[in-house]
Structures are given as C-alpha cells and as structure tokens.
Image (cartoon, rainbow, N blue to C red; front, side, top):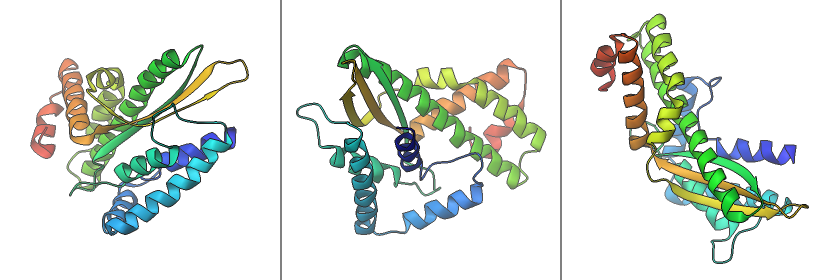
Length: 223
C-alpha cells in the first residue's frame, strides 16, 4: 500500500511544483510539454493513465455504477494536468484526498473537503514559485519575499474557503475488510480563479500586518 501511494502521488504531481525544484527547471519541463502535439499528449496521458489504473485496480479500487471507467477518468485527469497557459502556468490545479467512512456518501464528502485543502496547498505552492521568480529577477529582496511567503503560508484556510465550484475528475472507492468504504477523490480548479483567491488572501494579510508590500506587488505582478 505504501508503494502504491507513493506511485500515485508521483503521477499526480509529475507536472506540478515542488519546493526543491527550481523555477527554471519547472518552466523548461512545462515548455517541453506545451510543444507536444495533441496526439502526443493524448498518448502520454493514456500511457500514464493505464499504468496508474492498473495499480488502482490491483489495490481493489473500483467505480460506482454508471461512472466512467478508471482509465477514462485518469485520461481526463492527465490531459488537464498537461494544459498550460502562455505563462507556463497550469490551466488547472489539481487536488486529491482519500477518506474512510461507514458509508460511501460520508466518506465521499470528507474526501472532497480534504481534496480542497490539498488544492489550497497546491495554490500556495504556485504563488510561492511566482514570488521566488520575482526574487530571481531582482524585483523583490529576499526579506520582502520572506514577508510575502509568510502571508501565503498563513492564508491556506482562507484560500480553501474561497475555492468555488471544482471539477471532479476522478472518483473511485473500495470496500475494506471491515466493510467500511474508502473513497479517493481528485478535483481540478481553474488556475485563474485560484490565483485570484490566493492574491486576495495574501494582500489582506499584508495589509493586516501593516506591510505596504501589497502596493509593490500591485506594481510588479498586477495584484
């Protein structure tokens, strides 16, 4: 199970940001994906989807009656992850969570809420990378960037609460030995809307702390 979770996480965030990954490397990776043809992207997504679907099925995961097969759900998930805008930012930010409950509906509701928290964490990471880029371009000092980053880290709950309608791209479950249901949810959220929520949260926190950096962010980043 541990190896499966590690594999699942690796696939989910293969095109996402990690703190250890430099902004330059990330941009290079995303530009390479953006240059791929539609058919090549489809092949890339399908290959990854089939591999992950095999792991999921082997671990007992299935879909509710009437839902798309796991492979089709994963196809959609990967294709959405490979979409970037002209600034090489993801068009969609993905969040994922699992939850266990005595019945399917209870486990699903909890998983959705946890997925939103996970999504808020991804938004925080994207905004942090944006701030790191301004430091790299010498538009913000390291001290100023640290102040903004503190505001980003303090805003996770606000960001989570500000998230509007999400797209459920994956919903699978399995029945455990004690008959409880474990539900796995993967959701997507429009990046533009996500960044607006994050920017608002950061600006409000800076203003609350009496930090006039919010004016500089307006000037540099159009916040």
